[in-house]
Image 1 (tube, rainbow, N blue to C red):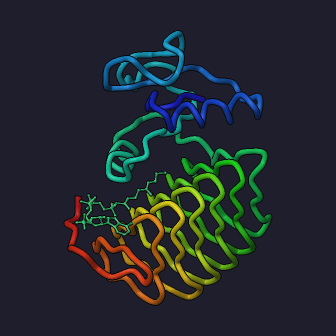
Image 2 (image 1 turned 180 degrees about the vertical axis):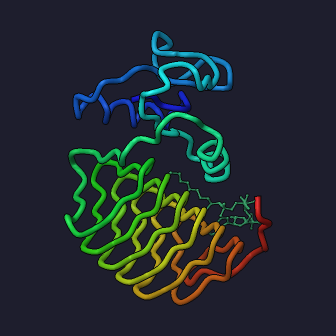
Image 3 (image 1 turned 90 degrees about the vertical axis):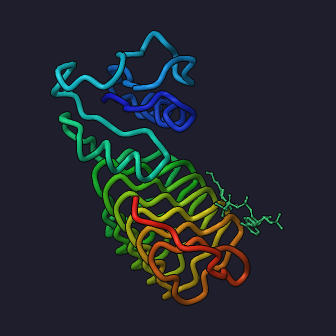
Length: 202
Ligand SMILES: CC(C)(COP(=O)(O)OP(=O)(O)OC[C@H]1O[C@@H](n2cnc3c(N)ncnc32)[C@H](O)[C@@H]1OP(=O)(O)O)[C@@H](O)C(=O)NCCC(=O)NCCS
């Protein structure tokens, strides 16, 4: 396994890789040191010819960067990385390149897309759909049968109520409550969450 990104998020993923006893071959990072990961593992900027057979996980929390890199990389994308202290129902599906961090719960028939981050302590209830490249921050909750579109950022501690819908590309501020529907590309916060501004694709 190779990580793409050597920052704080990568450090958490590396520790999961160690806990699971998976082989770790190093990390790419297009930036410059210092990195959060030990520099002994630094492979340099992304190089498609280096260990080309190794599964790669993009360890970058910015949804847009994660998506753009995922479309460019040549390495095979790693299967989902799931912390041993997370619960993922056998009837849930989780896409490749996604990560599920400690204490998270993904209930029955939930569908998690590719390159999604389900952060620490997140609860994804029954039949929830989470789009590709979305990030559910720590302790957020997606109520049963809610739908969260692609490339959304759901701030820490936020609640998406049961059956609510969050459109593509939304940013929901920390501690918010999305009660019914949030239009695509909206930045919103509050209880209940009110749109604050429009966002643009990319
Ligand atoms: C929603 C968010 C992205 C908005 O960022 P922003 O557009 O830069 O907004 P600002 O920080 O300039 O704040 C603008 C105003 O909105 C208020 N505000 C911002 N986020 C808020 C929130 N989540 N709830 C209530 N008020 C909020 C600020 O207090 C500020 O009010 P003021 O003008 O009276 O001082 C950010 O505030 C946020 O909540 N980020 C989530 C962080 C997070 O959960 N990280 C998890 C890492 S795992």
